[in-house]
Image (cartoon, rainbow, N blue to C red; front, side, top):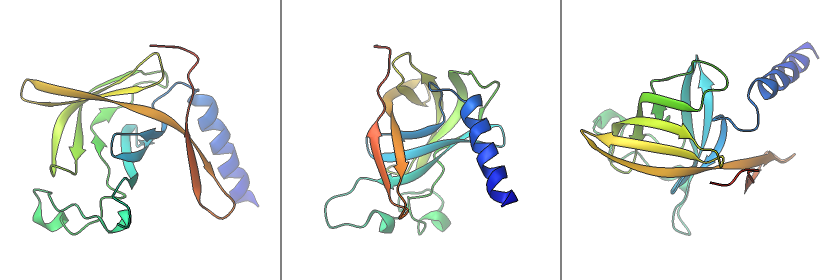
Length: 160
């Protein structure tokens, strides 16, 4: 009983510390769904699922392009794709000088994250002086009684 009340208290505390418009939670990327969390005062983002062609099991997709041959047999689901982004305060909207791992290429890049006023997360990856961006969209995820998850896009009160 004590354990569940502690977990509930932590959930309530984290909900009150991180408001509606923050970086933490589920995000829809162009090829996956990731969960961004606070990992020892740094941003981390674990791949929750990837989008694959029908009939292929996403849990069987391996990190085959990884430059580290020892990591090529691990599954892509569960990989942390963000590192080095220090969390300075709970209202932070910009994170710079971190790294992003791209399992399609098997390498990581310098990166910056910008939480936009419309609620989307602008993710910028750079190689030397060439940078590319993509927008990740926030998801509302519901965990059902049987453990399955359902997701829908969060709606923002602001437009961008």
